[in-house]
Image 1 (cartoon, one colour):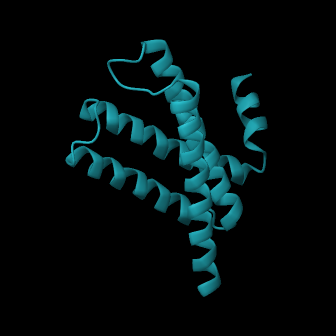
Image 2 (cartoon, helix red, strand yellow):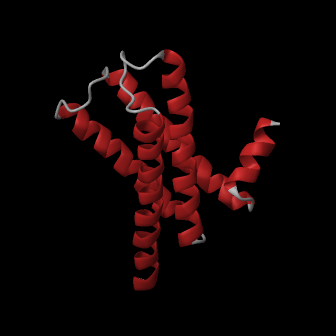
Length: 134
């Protein structure tokens, strides 16, 4: 039991760290910051898609580290994403409208769950993304 809790924490930290790192690279490194109302729409959409893909990879990593039943660390990641969004909204730290910020966090939740589902199917994320787009 203690080992499973430890693995869950490890999977949670690994998945969230990978997701956070990739989101930072996408939004800050590639696009130089993404802000609703300031970033052109095409860049905003592309950044949103790549940000969701970052969540897919994070969910995939969490499932890979934890193993069966795959979903516990991902569900905790989803809860943390939603809690963070609620906190940041209530604290007034998000520049965009509330609907935009919750849509963005919802896409992360969907991405995390999708990453776990892709892992369960047994293929690397990159191969599944290519097959899905074909």
